[in-house]
Amino acid sequence: MQTSESLVSSPSSSPPSSPTPSVPTVIASPCAACKILRRRCVDQCVLAPYFPPSEPQKFITAHRVFGASNIIKLLQ
Image (cartoon, rainbow, N blue to C red; front, side):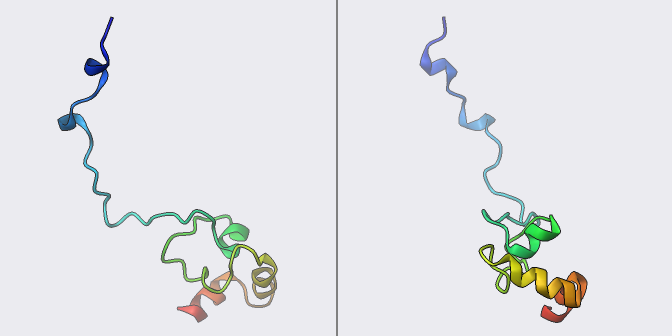
């Protein structure tokens, strides 16, 4: 039978705790645009400030008129 001390892993065997800077972090709730386009919403999402998750109809309307690609180009 193993004791609780032997089940604890040693600190040297743990993976490095610092994340790689090139990997964008994911927001808990994706913006309405990313939700509708079915893509990941990252911290640097250009659409997130203009299309909050609570108002998907705003993006649906803009997407019908301009298209997602043109909206992104305009905001950048």
